[in-house]
Image (tube, rainbow, N blue to C red; front, side):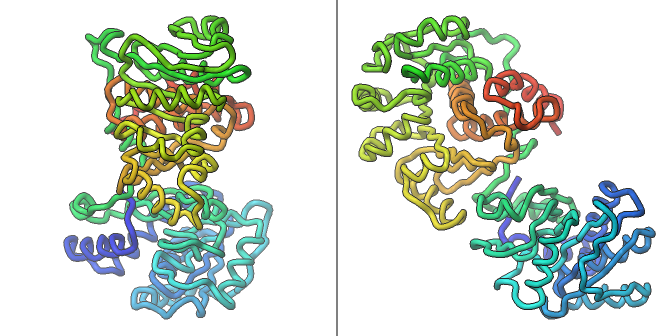
Length: 497
């Protein structure tokens, strides 16, 4: 799904109004109605008290529509209009006239504490056009919202969150109901404290325009993942499914390469070989009998030599950073120029020897967590700066970056793909090793580097989304990701649009 900037969102509104022969007022009614229907589905109890807080711009106008529809449906409604929150727009003013006509009273300016768990605050103060920090009475109201015990729903964007720069102060939303296309700010680590959940509401903006818009930013949702998915040919065999080689492991860290190797096979490739030190031979043959094994060195890898041509290689999980291992890694990079995934200690070794980045094969996939990424390319000031630096790094070194986070970002040159699947259950040891195996397995099956990274990350996250209702968040482990890969594939196959 395309991620729009402010200009594209506004142009989508303009084109829709023009091509559908409607007014901006009617489009506002349509947007407010979609929010109302979401609230009605999620809070059917008529004892729920909705406190709708509006600015005076078009976002506030959306809020007025919501307040009116809730009132007409016999819900308990308290309405506030913040006069310090922008100048009244024409469509806001028109909707305010309808509020007055209905006799809906407003400007209570207190966050009600009615009932236990029965208060929902609807935040409609600021939208995507915010250009300055909240001040005065508006800031005070946002502080009241953030210190209330209410469930907070923001219309389109949490008030105070900027679309193009770091946010310092904003409404902390439980749910953001955004219109038609996702916004980049929602998926940046700086803003996690303001956004727990995002719902994208279809308000009928012009589909042809949306299709025609050029953007470098995409959200990998279920539809996007399904488009990249390559079903298994009914006449295939293990030779056609590709041979993956996983290189890693050292004394005390053999589990990492075991997880990666097993993930590669379960992701669908036909053959897997693990290259590991001799201390891991019995382990991998015991816990993963489907794997072939090549050993080198006693407790760490000292040389990397093999006499076959794997379709893809993943290197780094549990590898260690022994000087002999580092030299072996350097010699390997000098020779190998095919499909490659680098993770964990492989990334750390590169960060200590940045000149080796020039040895990487084109479109190599690097899968750093935040600290590993910082060691590779330096620090960043905020999420927007981080993306700019990743784009520059990817272009300079011709690599695909998989920046692991709560919302993992796959960056390839000028393009950024933000993953929508997954949850905090994946914040567990070994999760990244499994991801390395999955992506390597995708490459071995014939996916190109970007598809392997984007689809592999989505599949990895989807396992946790499926599992957590059964396992719970805390009890989920990296090994369970392997158990749920099959179910994730089933969901992608069964639920395709």
